Structure formats: C-alpha cells, structure tokens
Length: 117
Image (cartoon, rainbow, N blue to C red):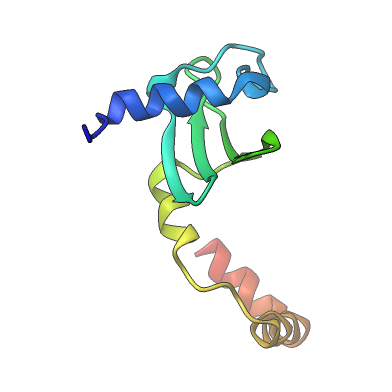
C-alpha cells in the first residue's frame, strides 16, 4: 500500500470539509495548504485551519462513519503547533480549577501584579 504524501493527505481531509470551506469571519475560502492534522482516530480527524486572508484559525472535528460524515468547528487563537501540544496534555482536574479560584479570591492583587510584570 502506497503511503500518502502530506499534501495528498491534506487534500483528502480538505475534501471532507464541504460545509466548512469558508472562514466564518471574512468568508474567504480556506486552502488545503493551511490544513494541519492535529489528531487522527478511527473515523475521526481533528484539523487546524488558518485563513490566509484574515489569519484567524479554526479547529474542526471531522467524523466519518457508515451513516455519513459530520463536522463541527470552532474559532481558536491557537496556532497548529500549540493545538497539537495542548491536545496531548492532561486536562485540568476539578481540584486544580477550584484551587485557582480560591487563590484568585484571596490573592487577586498578587495575580494582577504578575500579569502586569
């Protein structure tokens, strides 16, 4: 079996994005060259697209099954390498989020100072 090149794989995934071909902000059509595969599973593809005109980015999940194809997308401020890196990291647990909330409640002035420095 012949291995597909990166460009062939991009084109194949891009062809599946029939309903999400245009940037939702500027309406410019995406190109397959700006598509980056973030993660691939059985029948699923998480892809990152960058609009060549307005430079905004979108993450799109493409699901292909015997019943057909479905896709959902969301705008993001992540670039493709960051999306790949963050996808592979462990999610924050509830305790971490609650601990940070408590920290902000009691020491918000310190946190604001850190942000400004």
